[in-house]
Image (cartoon, rainbow over all chains, first blue to last red; front, side):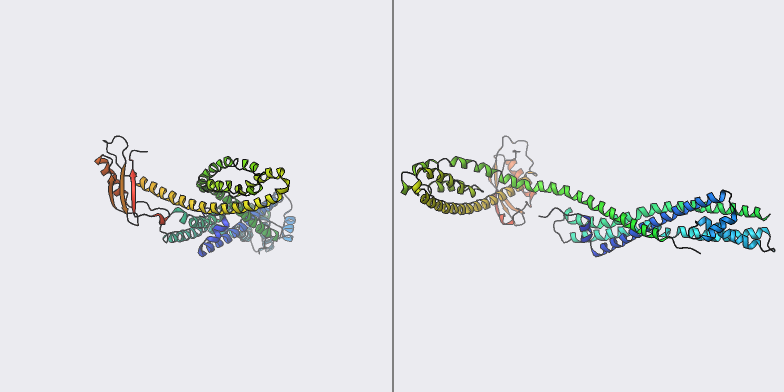
Length: 225
Length: 258
């Protein structure tokens, strides 16, 4: 009488039905991808914050704007998002300043439009794939639950063929099925946490970008007089 | 104009993601393994308990064997003067040993051991005859030992089968009595611990066909209570081994025994 069921994770996975196996495989893939993006995004946001800190320090230390512009324009790949916003705004400002027909308000507006366009590109880049994390967080528990429900249905269907129904007949099937929910939750929980954290971090960085844009516009306006 | 993220980060992220999953898989594997091992240990204890009870009486039966050993020892002392007679005495004690050992499960090695002490005392007394004697004695004792062992084995098997049968029947009877006793409502007027004997006819599914009172308790209210209880307990539990099923059962009841 083999009472001792081996309930290691591998046997649970191996004994599951095909559909449950597929659900588990999908969830495993989703979990892997979401962790990949969690790490990539966290690195990207950390770098963006560090570069923003660095550029703000340089900018407010009172250096020459032209020198700052040159370093930002020459080293675009290493420059941070804020440096690129500054570069776009200052480039546009210099172009428009040469035209005598435009008054100060138009020059500032043009420069702000250029900065806003770059700002939107930058925040969009930072926010890319956050939607994926949100989707994983909200959907993968349901996918796991689907696998579980299917597995439990199978377990009970097998029970119908047995005259003396005991818990021992259903328990392995239910345990197998519950693994699907476990994987779904494992994929979902970090994704939700990471999504919320990243959304918050990106909001804060964007606010810094926006306030910089406003302050820089004031500086440009003062330069026009 | 947007620039791709620096490549090392992508690789690092992929490696870290794999690492997270490997760590989780390891934790799950170890964690779940740890959980499965404890119930196993409990089950082993549960299932090994009954055999321990069965084997327990065996050593008790073996203990008398050392008491049997002394008798052969005096016999060899008689041997040396009469070489011809020497061959005869060894077989004599052995059947005795074999007979005594029949009920005992595990003594095959012991009959082989016993002849050896017999030979050792004989050797120093008569050096000339000792080799032939030894050879013949050994051959004889070996034959006897194997015969005795085979006999023992057969007897043992028969005894075990009978025991198992009796045990199964007893267990079945106990289960039936327990099932019925649950339903007995003892009337207040009963005094002492009277015994009732019922002849019960069963259908193959355990349902009670009829229950006839063979020996009354002397208290008609109690007899009626037991008869009602038999009816209520129908269908009675079936034996674990279906071959033990009997159509007619004789059930004895002492409703007050606890």
